[in-house]
Length: 276
Length: 78
Ligand SMILES: Cc1ncc(C[n+]2csc(CCOP(=O)(O)OP(=O)(O)O)c2C)c(N)n1
Ligand code: SF4
Ligand code: SF4
Ligand code: SF4
Ligand SMILES: [Mg+2]
Image (cartoon, rainbow over the protein chains, first blue to last red):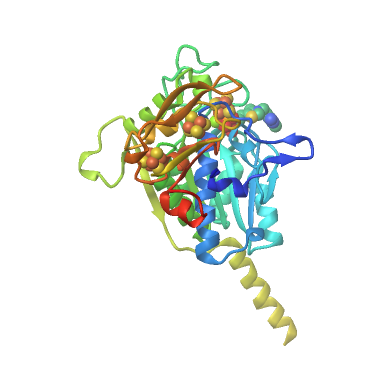
């Protein structure tokens, strides 16, 4: 019997018994993002000759952030709500050669962790940030988030959200990230390609993945995935940008100095001066 | 012919795999697992192109398609 090829990167059993299936509800987009990420990492390990030990996963708190917890056969940290990026920063300063992948939710990254997000991008730290945007706080009961689109009903906005949503990609690009892209869980191949580009990029790579929470949206995963396809449009189709559709694609891909490299330069300059 | 394998303990019956299959090679079965989730099943695997999209999109790592080539490599029957 053939088993799913990505199970080789997952801990199916632990000291307290089976860890799989995952804690996520049926059809949750977070599990799909985990699958896409492992496909991307699998390619990178094979194609770039990187060791598994050089890849580290960090996350905060939320359904999306549960992906690191208990499941990964990689070094990983399931940390504090909104604070995955400061912890990733610490890991990177201790070992600048690490490939750090952060799983974060829209609430985790844009609400409680908004400042950390901005300043990680501003410093252009060498981390890949995968922001799973389901437009609400899934774990705590489907409350409104800074990323909930205007007009959308949630458990705390039963008559529709009166606020405008943050644009995660615009925020990341303005703050200074090297690489910024948006895809959806209904775009597996594009998401995998972008994650590979992001991990290979020196500097901050932000990939927003629009995702489905079938439980709090009281819809089927299949219907929500079809809607994600229908309500988004590639930025490459510039001639026909229909109003009301969310643009998807790679918004920026720049080569610019990365924080740990600049820091290392200072160390090198000043240690050679003292040794003179 | 390519073969479909479903891990009954992991599958949560979301049927995303069925919806993405471009060849309609797989579909919902009338079988439930122990938790009551509908399991996907082979419909017409002679149509399967081995694109592996179903494996790629499964949120629960519950589905695998074995191509003839893989089966041959692993010494199984084709
Ligand atoms: C300091 C702190 N404040 C609040 C919470 C409660 N809390 C847990 S998850 C969460 C929101 C998660 O939303 P998101 O990051 O979008 O993840 P999702 O569950 O939607 O994937 C909140 C507010 C917490 N765990 N810690
Ligand atoms: S509550 Fe929503 S986001 Fe959380 S696991 Fe369930 S489907 Fe996924
Ligand atoms: S996508 Fe996975 S979990 Fe969902 S029905 Fe198919 S095999 Fe089961
Ligand atoms: S490999 Fe492709 S064609 Fe074959 S069952 Fe899966 S999705 Fe369908
Ligand atoms: Mg969320």
